[in-house]
Length: 229
Ligand SMILES: Nc1ncnc2c1ncn2[C@@H]1O[C@H](COP(=O)(O)OP(=O)(O)OP(=O)(O)O)[C@@H](O)[C@H]1O
Image (tube, rainbow, N blue to C red; front, side, top):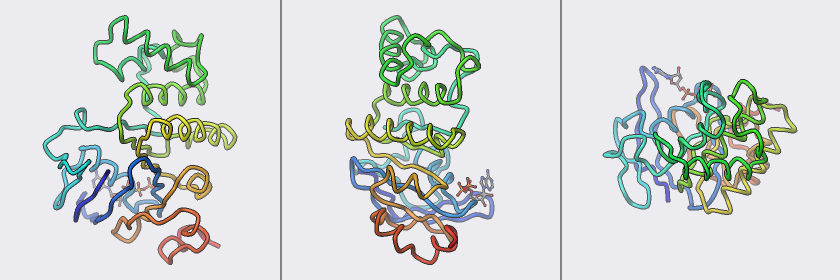
């Protein structure tokens, strides 16, 4: 289970506190105004931003001593997930090893097939559509098989139909393996479609997760101001 224990983050003049836990195997959407601190929170969990106070715990273990690469998590961003000079299969195989060998590449090819990219493994990102690139990045996350997945607007660059298709694919595949997922999104529809709970990040605080359906049906003031009428 992910637990943020009396966490306080500082980035320049910006301050954010969080004291919450995310139930294992569930999806929590991070919703809140631009500049509210959603990405900052993910950075701290991923290990790129050391906390000013408090702890990030995974299954009771303080992650502070672990550098980002050794944390039990995968990260998926909106873009920049793939190295442009490497083929799809090489990019995905990097999820297994910084120097992938033939067996790693074989597993990467299988992961690409699982996300519907069989036959495109030798293309570079520039030769793939945006949706295909998103699939390749998701294949790498699946292959890494880490128990915690952090997603920062992962499919934001895609059109609405493709976005919901990718979200459903991610939801099905990651939920099947019991991963806990934090999903930063600006779209309440994403939270409704994919998340069990919502963490409102606003006014300097990441609030404890609340059930997505009831929270979005009756948003608290901090979220209502952001969502609009
Ligand atoms: N490297 C940095 N140095 C100083 N301040 C920063 C830095 N990175 C972000 N900030 C500030 O921290 C605050 C939170 O930013 P953050 O990117 O976490 O918000 P966000 O909720 O993810 O926003 P968005 O929805 O627009 O992506 C902002 O006020 C931002 O200007």
